[in-house]
Amino acid sequence: MTKKESSKGRRGPDRISSLPTDIMREILSCLPLIDAAGTCILSKEWQRIWYAHPVIQLDEVDFGADYCNYSDKHRAKRFAFLTYLENFLECRKRPSEFNSVDVDKFLLRMTVEPDSPAKELINNWICYALEKNVKSLFLGLYTFKHHHYSLHGIAFHTNWLVKLSLSGCEIKCCSFELPSLKSLFLYSVCIEDYDFKNLMAGCPNIEWLCILVNNKKLQTIVVSNPNLQFFQVCLLSSNGKIRIESPNLHSLEFVALNLDLCKVEITATTTVRELTLRKTYHKGTVIHIINEFPLLEKLVVYGPTELQNLPIDQPNLDTLVLKDCKVKDEVRINAPKLRLFEFMGGLQDLRA
Image (cartoon, rainbow, N blue to C red; front, side, top):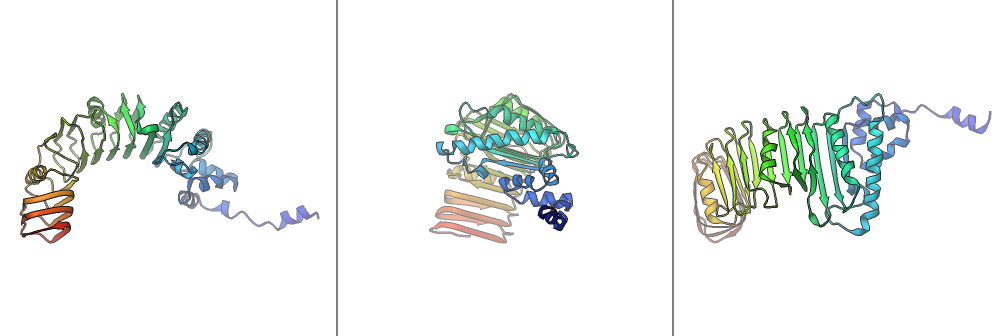
């Protein structure tokens, strides 16, 4: 017997490739992207599992680039990431016994450089995820000098998508048919009134909505989705309008709201039980918004806000949190059911 034959004869069974599929997928989901991709060399079974994994997380950070701090020295790393994206998509599309597996979660986070060929590749990945009945879709697409990456003309049509998060994108001329969508998060996006209206019309059953825009193209936000329960909004337009018509809204959060610059209309104020005000510098805005909701059970005010002669008159209020606030003179609190009170900030005089 040769040495090679002897070695082969002593080799035990390949136990790691005999693990149940669910356990192999769980192992892959716990590994960083590069390490998970490296399992393909273990065996053909691991390779097939990786190419059909229901969770796809593609982040340039795993290749050593950083979309938060753009640098030319990361160009080679971004190129390597693009190469991986192209090869991985090709492998995912190859015919196999696992091709029928749906995608539970898809995340793509990267920087798109000027004149980059990545646009078509990005669109192909989005279309692939939608074709595979993705349930959670997260896109963080950033461009050089903090311009917005254009999601132009993409058809977001699926009956399966439950969560959608878009960051750093410009949403233009897209179409939306998302009857199962429950959560929508828009952060640092660029979108105009017409496109926003179409977006909301395409998500009739949404329950959780977060809109944090940092441009002035969006002038009007109208929300009337009947199942909406939580709404967080930041509108920086100097002549903006927020109209909330959802009849079952339970929790509402305003960020950097100034009623001198933005008009707010709320038709169903008695359903709101939780109100949060963040970075609301204008005292008149704080007073007006609090008084709009007579049945609050929880009120949170995050500074820096100067609270001077602020009356809080809420008969059902259970929790009051004032953080990073500067109190001058007094804050008059009339809340007989108040159970929890938390204050962090400068205090001169507080009468409760």
